[in-house]
Image 1: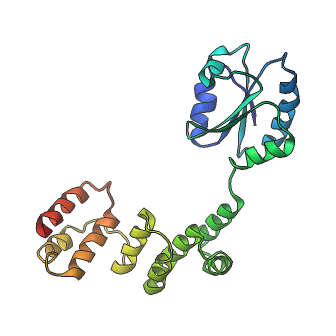
Image 2 (image 1 turned 45 degrees about the vertical axis):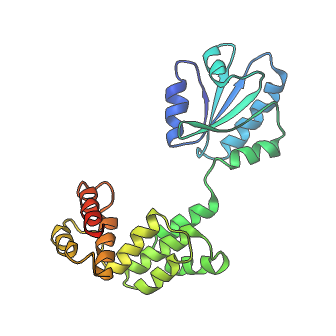
Length: 234
């Protein structure tokens, strides 16, 4: 997709759009020879992404506000925006292979897309096969571990998770594995009972922490229970 963007439409067409789709911004002018060379290359390469990346063309003579915002000292000047932030850029005309490398970094990663599709399809065999050739693939490990937990194979899931650094995702899935349950609507009775034992019972303390992990930080009860746990332990 190619958009002609103005000072008035920049916020909506570029900044807001970049929250969901990366945008390449081409600052150009009609009198600029290198711009005339680079423009068609950008349009061709971005067009080949089939909408995964958007090209926003800005005539700097007609839209000085955008040029000033980017502090462009010369043109053509090309910037990439994702999530409302400038993430990359270059100055001057570039050959097609360099433009392809620039745009490729913004589009979806085919390998990551394949992992996501396997997870969505609950393709355990595919994820197992992938981990034979790429044993450190964190997305595949996390996805497979969650599938294993949901089928009751908790020991294998925990062994998988131990292969990668701890994260919010791994802590949640490990908690599911140890509790052998999905998050419940109401853990209050269980947590209240566990509070009396957390100071002297390691297993009770771990169960308490796992339940809080499944409840998550957005649950209004979580912070209160963490304070109660701290009071019992210290």
